Amino acid sequence: MKKFVLALLLTFAFMPAAFAARMRLTVPEEAPIGQPFFLELRANEAIGDVTVTWRGQKFVLAPRRNAVRTILGAPNDAKLAGSTLPVQVEFDCGAKGRIRAERKIKVTGYRYPKQVLTVAPKMVTPPQSELKRIAEERQLVRKALATRSKGGVLPRRYVPPVPGIPTAYFGGFRVYNGVPRSGHGGLDLRAAVGTPVRAIADGTVVLEGAHYFSGGAVYVDHGGGVLSAYFHLSKNLVEAGQKVKAGDAIALSGATGRVTGPHLHLGLFSGGAALDPLPLLEPQRLPKGVEVLYEI
Ligand SMILES: [Zn+2]
Image 1 (cartoon, rainbow, N blue to C red):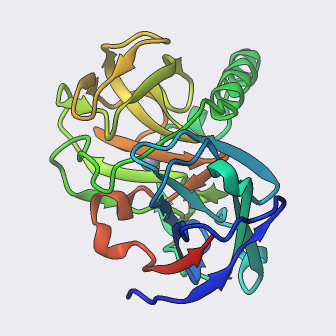
Image 2: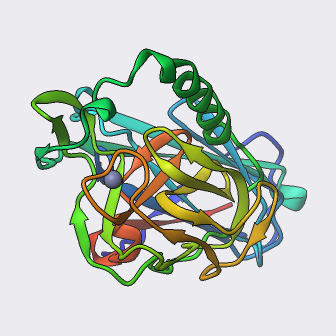
C-alpha cells in the first residue's frame, strides 16, 4: 500500500521561498508487538545525519544518496498492544535548517504460539557452579545489545543464514520440562551440525563466545541499534571487531547450549528489543509501509 499525503513540516529556521525540497518518510500505520518494520526516508536534496527517535531512544543514521533505511519494532510485550507510539525523524537540510517530522504508529497484538520443550534439567535450573558464568555472559550480551553505532541504509533483502526451514517461531511462550519461561527470542532454522552460518547483512561482529544457554554465539551490529545474533554454533569463524559482509560464513551451526537438537537460532534486535527475524527472510510478512510526502 502506498499513499501520498502532502504535509507541512515543522522547521526551526526561516524557510526561504526557494525551490521546494521534498522528503518522503515511509513507516507502517500499524505494527504488531515483536514484529520488525522498516523506516525509510528519502529526500531530493542533500541532508545531514538523520536522528530517529523511537520509544525514548535515539538512533543516528548517515544518509546515502539522501536516503536512510533502518529496522524498528515494538517489543513483544502484550501491554503495548493498543498503544500508539510516535516515531520522529530530524535532520539538517541546507538553508532550510533543521527539519523535523513525526508519524504515529498503532501497536497491535499478535498471537504467538506456545511451545512445550524437553531439554536437559541443568538447562532449566542451572547448577549453582554456573550462575556466576551465566551472570557474566548476560552482562556481555547486554553490552553488545546496547551498541549504538551510526546506521545508514539497511538492505530491503536479507540473506538466509542457513538454507533450512523454520522449526520454531519467534515469540512463543515456552515451557521447558514443564517449567514456564519467557517467550522465544528468535527464529529456529533447521541446520545439520557443521552447516555454514551466513551473516544476514553487512555489519561488525561485536561479541562472540561459547555461552551457557546460547552455546556458540555470534552477535553482529548492523548500525542504528540493529543487531543480529546466531546461537548454538559448533564453531565461530569470526572475532569481535571483525567486519562482515552479507552472506559471509561467520560460523558453523551446531547443537550447543540449551537445545533439543541441532539447529540455528537467529536473533534480531532493534534498540535492545528482540524482534521476529522471519519477516526479514519473508518480506511479505512485513507490516506495509505508508509513504508520506513532505514539502520542506
Ligand atoms: Zn531458538
